Image 1 (cartoon, protein in one colour):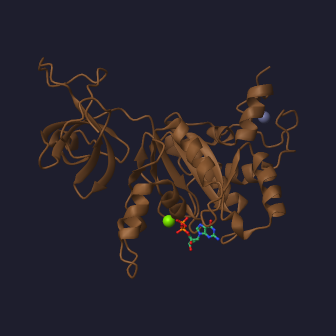
Image 2: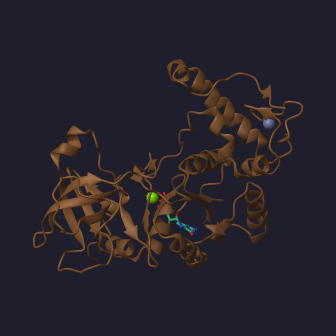
Image 3: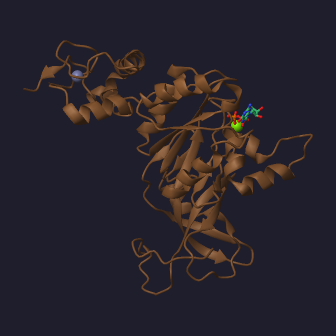
Length: 335
Ligand SMILES: Nc1nc2c(ncn2[C@@H]2O[C@H](COP(=O)(O)OP(=O)(O)O)[C@@H](O)[C@H]2O)c(=O)[nH]1
Ligand SMILES: [Mg+2]
Ligand SMILES: [Zn+2]
């Protein structure tokens, strides 16, 4: 660990000294403190790997929240005490809502075929939320030791038809863990694991993040109540590089507000739209005669169900629509 001078983030204090700026990544929040890991490897000074940081009050005055995943500039470093203060937050590339993590590069959506059984609509809701973040999406099928190989093969083919590469996995058998670890290490950056409760997300995180596994092992076997099992959000280093966060259990992610954006969150539809386009502008792709997307694609009924829900939500928010949101008019011809 060390600090790096970040040339793209000039000091805003107006001073012209050549002191290198200190930047780090917020990996956890604790009450009013941020836990920050210093970025870069320049000048591996005698600093603790994690700094406990307060926030400069001017950030509060600007209404700026510090989130897990934020890249922050530090001031007032007290290396011996491992303390500093967050002076600035770099612009975020995105902000996931549940869990609240900024600058997410990758969302790992986990589902299982058994215990609990896979619910295609629920999985679609998770995938839509993941796609809406703009991050890369990986689809993991967990607990594959509980199902027959034939059943697994059928589901893999079905989910590939949804436009995803599928990562079959069993943390109990160690199957698929290394392959997924390699994939996650390739992109680096920040990843978030999400999916319904009970599918094996926390077990997967333990398998992928040695530091977390050590911490879990250190927790009393009787209580089994460490920070990792609470609603606390924390980024853990992956063995091959990058950081990964778990999600607390919630089973019904909210769909996005904008009906016009929904088609983009279905990769199989998005690919078709990019390849052939649809001759109608503002088309909802719901089977109107002439819509090139047609209705003969596997997730069409799920797309319809989600679209209906998003449109009802949009109708209930007329003020947002008047402010320039999507119109709900029927498709008009573009040619
Ligand atoms: N059979 C089987 N059970 C698993 C596997 N991974 C996790 N489990 C079990 O599934 C339950 C829920 O796991 P957990 O990781 O807490 O799921 P989460 O709610 O998604 O975080 C626990 O009892 C785990 O032991 C697996 O690969 N195979
Ligand atoms: Mg869990
Ligand atoms: Zn269309």
